[in-house]
Amino acid sequence: MKLDILAIGAHPDDVELSCSGTIAKEVEKGKKVGILDLTRGELGTRGTQEIRDQEAKKAADILNVAIRENLGFKDAFFTNDKTHQLQIIEIIRKYQPEIVLCNAIKDRHIDHGKASKLVSDACFLSGLRKIETIYNNDLQAPWRPKNVYHYIQWANINPDFVVDISEHIDKKIESVLAYSSQFYDKDNKEPNTPISSKNFLDSVKYRAADLGRIIGVKYAEGFTVERYVAVNSIFDLI
View 1: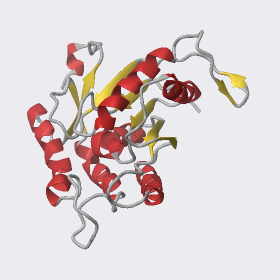
View 2: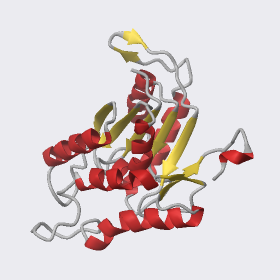
View 3: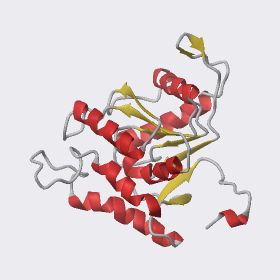
View 4: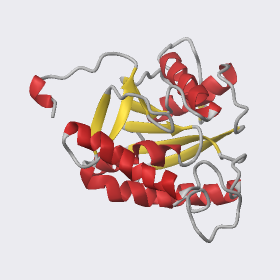
């Protein structure tokens, strides 16, 4: 299966928190979108990796994505090395996405910045024909996505462009709430974390509202780029 977009996150819920509105919008337009989680989030304070697996599946169903896979990297301890790069290259060549969305270039959680660079490097290396990877006993063809965009997470990073998600904010929030073990629930007796407060849950919507305000729409998501953004016409800009 060929994908139009592959959204990659260090942990299950990274994608939902950061770019699920954009995903929902493109899926509605008929684009094939997939999600790749690098770890199972097994070091998270709340819940278990089995619960996170169930939540990730629920979120994928809500967003109606074509595929969701998990590479099972070690939470907090994966590195940007050949072994990890090759596993991501195999997925990129398997699904041949035109666009890859990945973690913020820097953030509070150390995995986010690491995953950002790891995925970016793997996207470049995936286009080199002398790097050989095998899938289902067949030699994979090289493939380099046309664009790699980095979504914004905890840290306030100025976006290079934003996407209007006004009609898809409810779907975004629904996909985030699929991770009921991680986010605010007044009846949850597990330890509090930086992302379990009501303020954090509220911030998902009010940060989207603030980006939307800046461009004159209700809600938006922001991304940073690795090269200039090009448009066919100045009228492509809203």
